[in-house]
Image 1 (cartoon, rainbow over the protein chains, first blue to last red):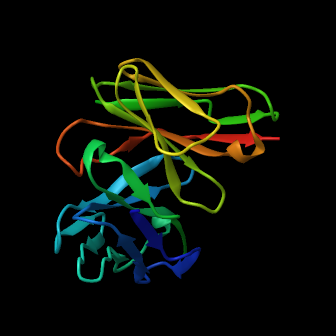
Image 2 (cartoon, chains in turn purple, green):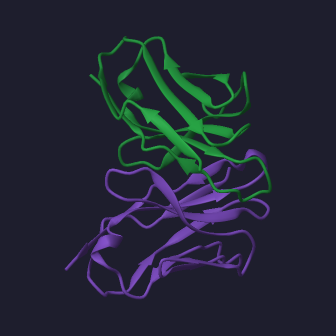
Length: 112
Length: 114
């Protein structure tokens, strides 16, 4: 069945460092891809999404490109801030009812 | 604007006791509703989804059940909790529409079964 694999965390970075969180997926057809973020004490919220191959989703300085040839949707940010500390989830949605299949999540800790 | 309420935030229950978690959505009508669970060290797993009142689809066999008595109310239940039911439970909603619609999540319930 469909699945999502994320790099394991925690990822620890200094402020202004470059961030990459790897995400690959297995799916038949053409899923939509998402990154959700969970800040401490809060629920998940959508960070960005891409619905077809070569689309780039972007938000708050984060970017991810839908790569069908490598079945990947890696999350990147050029300069992280302490406020980016959170858990990041990669997910895919395919078929009806917008059911999401999530990766295990990657915890990011950014230090001043 | 739309909001989603989920309670309680934390819950400690003994093995064998019943469970009822409630989720309500405001500011939208006829949403799709979802229950997810995150066990320690694992990703979010879809447990149930509902496309309308009284319509429940189960994604995995388990000790839990779900009900949707009203359009914007989604309830997760168990008659007898197991240790393996411990985890972080999240309710979510999405508008019906084109594929790729985003989900809006509640703040979750941390359930510990002892």
